[in-house]
Length: 295
Length: 285
Image (cartoon, rainbow over all chains, first blue to last red; front, top):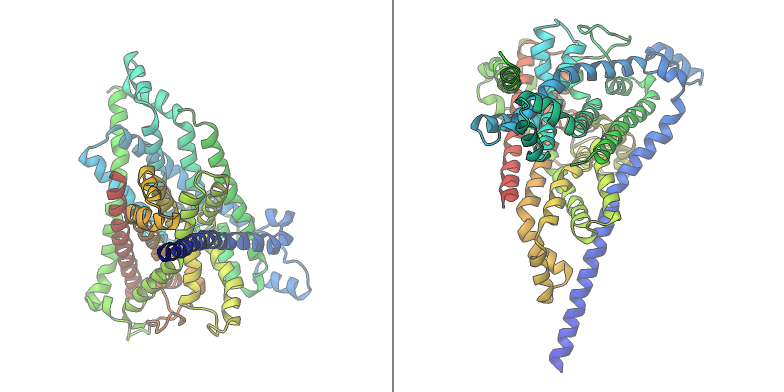
């Protein structure tokens, strides 16, 4: 009797601990999502007021203009057009460099499994993925700013970003192509189709959605990068389409606004816009991969 | 030459570019660091002097190395209970449910927020809170930066670990239940021992992320070039000092900053190497 009572007690204690742990997990998990919601709410509440037409059609104001506006209790004039165009420009430069090299390398890796050289390239890709972005900024500075453009430039910024994109594109291409059934390739080869046509007319179209997803995800990743651009593109107060001149980008503008007390009101709307861009590209990428997953 | 050969050559050439970029990064960092190491020798790593005054220039990386390690490790310690709960939520308690999907999408969202936005939020929301709580007068410092870093690396710490937790065989778990274990006992006596090394690997990879983060930390750590004497003190990290001082640097100072970049690269590389090694061991099984 005594034994049973003692045993029930300990059973109850064990069940209590089990319940306690269960609720602890739920509570801590709930706490974890609080910052996300708080950050998004803060961006929206503080940011939406400054978003108007001139925010998209005018370049960033200078300190004096902003100071007068704040003194007169008006909304700061101007917008972030130079940042928007600069971001698009540098993402384009980065994509032009990274997309072909990344996809071709990805094809090579998926076509030549289990070779020493393939493993070497795969390991190097992994290392590239782990390189801190600020270090890639240093590389962009040494290789392009110092040696090619003789000054801060869009090319240097785009180049640094392209090294960030490469590993993501290579890995997603390889993973996508590996998932395509061997039989599709064999069917093509059996019909006498030459190898290069099998790759470009069979494998790539079949895996297109996967490749596109990889490219879009890598774009959304580099869109918010600030640190490497501080060392390479520097920023500019005008719209610039010259590949060899300093160029702005949305995150660079946020950094400038943050450092200038007169322009501080612009940081939230710029951040809101940046977040919307990043999220939109992310969602499009995931939609594409979900919709076209046919194999 | 036929199309077949051209294709093979083009594919091979693109891998050569990867090879050249990787070797080039290592080569350029080492070459750029040589003047600093020539001037200060190995002492560069163990000195915390940072004096840019001309004629008495003296550079050492120790305070930045310490700052980087302390901030990142403290961030990881804050991150672990949250990441652990989330991965159990997704991988065990609410596995394959709608709730788990929602939670993992929201956690994914964390990875999409740019570093500079985390920095702004930390500066305007978290910093006043830290001041109000009386933790720190200025609100800047290791503590504030680590909290933001912890939030930033949660998605990296949960993605692999929740996957590994889901991979634990059902038979093992049922055997524990059959012996009368409660769910919590099953988790601690079966799930964690068999998924432990995978969970550990994901935390190491998250640490690798934290080490290289720049903007958010730069905006919150206070940027003082001294070895921090407590968790609430201000300090500086390797990435932050590069971001802050690279623009106006030349000569010996530029070389010293590149050398710090080289050290940062080596530290993150070693940490990632360990993380990936453990992960690959686990995935092979």
